[in-house]
Each structure stands twice: as C-alpha cells, then as structure tokens.
Length: 184
Image (cartoon, rainbow, N blue to C red; front, top):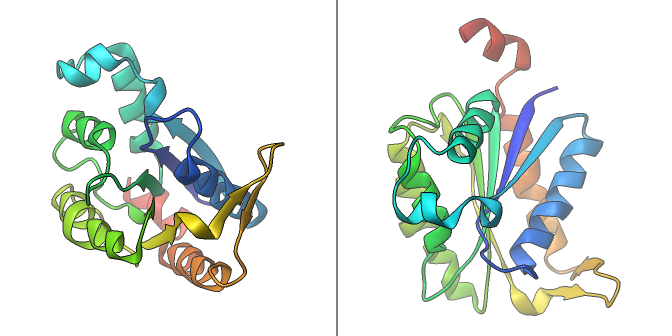
C-alpha cells in the first residue's frame, strides 16, 4: 500500500477537476492505497499570496506532501495554463519537494488544445521539483463530464478507458512501499 496525496488546484467551490480527482481517489482507495486529500482552496489566501512559508497550514500541506509516495494533481485549465492557486502553492514548497515521488497530472478544460498546459506548463515545474517519475498526464474536456443535481459525476464512456490507462500507469510507476520506506 502506497501513501498518495491528491491535490486539487481548483479555486472554485464547484469544480469539474475536483470531482475528477475525487473519482480517481476512490479508484486508488479501491486499489488498496492510503489516500489523503489536499484542497488548495482551503489554504489561507494571505499565506499563499504573500509567500508565508512559515504559515502553519502551509507547513502542514508540505508535511502531507513529504509523507506521500505518489501525488495526483488536478487542475482546471484557465487561459491555457494551470491555475495560479496551484502555482502559488508549488512556489512555497522546497525546491526538491517532489524528490522520489511519482506524479500524475490531471486537468479539465474546454478543448483538447488545453492538454498542452499539462506538458508545457505543469510538467516542467513538477520535473524541476525533483519528481521521480511524472506519468502521462490526462485532460478531460468539460463536455465529457456530467454532474447530476445530487453532485454525482458521470464520465463519458469515450473518456473512461484513457483515464483508466493513466491511473493504471501511475499505480504501476509507484515505488514499492517497502523500497520507499527503506530509502527514507
């Protein structure tokens, strides 16, 4: 069993990317992994905007990241980039905060062209932070996500195989929990 931190980079209360992340989290739990969720929207805005590295909630978020073997980051794409909220949090982390971690980047956006935000925007930042392995990211176009009035997410059958493939790739790339503990 690996420890996985899921990180929602959406600033919105109602968010397709957060619902997608919840969907993936449930899959990871069913696979036997210990999943902890971090909603960046809940961190103090003042600490994020004023780079308060010593804020207790920022330090706790960094501690959660430090304990994780793998990280799943989900963000909506705005103006062809991942959210400023996610960027502000990543900027407050130590330079090599992702060392020895496997990372799965996920995004939601209005068109398939937004997939470039994962490879040309987010991936280089994650790589510069020492990620052990950044698996193939995945963007789900908004029209393939439907939320019922009860808040239940339905993912179009056309998209589900691709999403399953990247989650399986993430799970395969996770370090063995025993090896990860020994190297720590």
